Image (tube, rainbow, N blue to C red):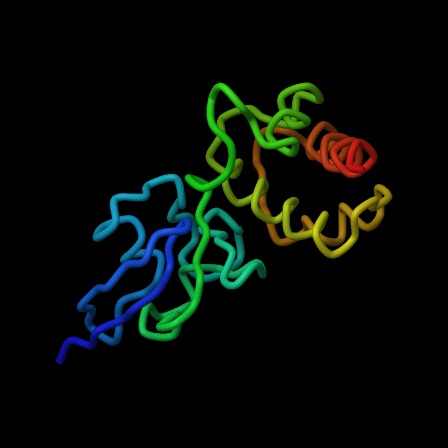
Length: 155
């Protein structure tokens, strides 16, 4: 039995008919075509599927699509453009916090969430906040430096 879900995705109103068991991750990728949100472990441990729900970090693999009825969902597609990177994206590029890119969408959204809550975090605060985002390539040093720098550059 499908249910109608009304939500806002990346600033646009969306109405979907979904099966109650479908995850937000599956709906975002398969029905909305927003493939920047990555499917990693599908158990909420890796952070690859991170989105913002009403401005707060959430693992889209652990949220049912019916749970976001009436809410705002932001995916990586809502953040910056190739011509105008978000400050977190620009800092990741400058500080070599990127390699294969699989974790990057979740890392960017988690960093944006952190900087909203704690505008000028130190290294320990960044490491704590980003601990739910697994990266097999960078060793985290550039990633952490980038988030600290992005915070320091904020007004």
